[in-house]
Amino acid sequence: MLCKLLSLKADDEGTDPEKLIYEIYHAAARMKAHLTADQLLLITQWVDFYKKVPEQTLEKIKKEVGMELVETTISEHILNQGILLGKAEGKAKGIIEGELKGELKGQIAILESLFRQGVLSEEQMKYMTAPLRQKLNELAEKQSLTEPTIH
Image 1 (tube, rainbow, N blue to C red):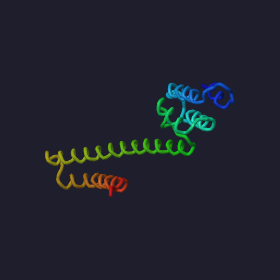
Image 2 (image 1 turned 45 degrees about the horizontal axis):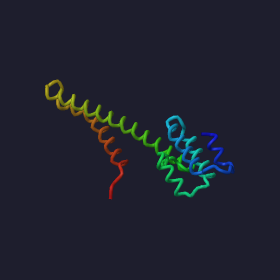
Image 3 (image 1 turned 135 degrees about the horizontal axis):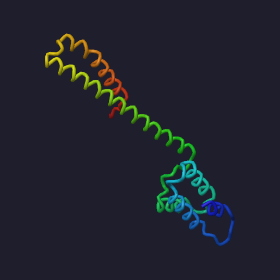
């Protein structure tokens, strides 16, 4: 692929830049799983700079080989990496909060069950469930503040 990228820059007579770009992107698509986002970005920028074909042709080639969604600028790359990181952090936070809510609800259910069985008095049950309910309410309020609203 490196030779093809360098050939694209060269002013060799008899080379077909469209075919060369197709071969570059086809090779990149086959190697996509082994290339980093930085390497894909570099390939895209190199081809974009030395393309010698109309933009329509370039987009058609990218679409044919499945490379149309590769970032084309460093800013776009950084933005997408930030979005992915944010999604992962949000998912992890949601899982932790969900587990905590489930644990709190489970503890409350156990205490209520012990009250129904006569093991705890109503006063003991209320005393022990109050802080758990408070924490559960705080989590619910926090979640409602961070959820997007649809207008």
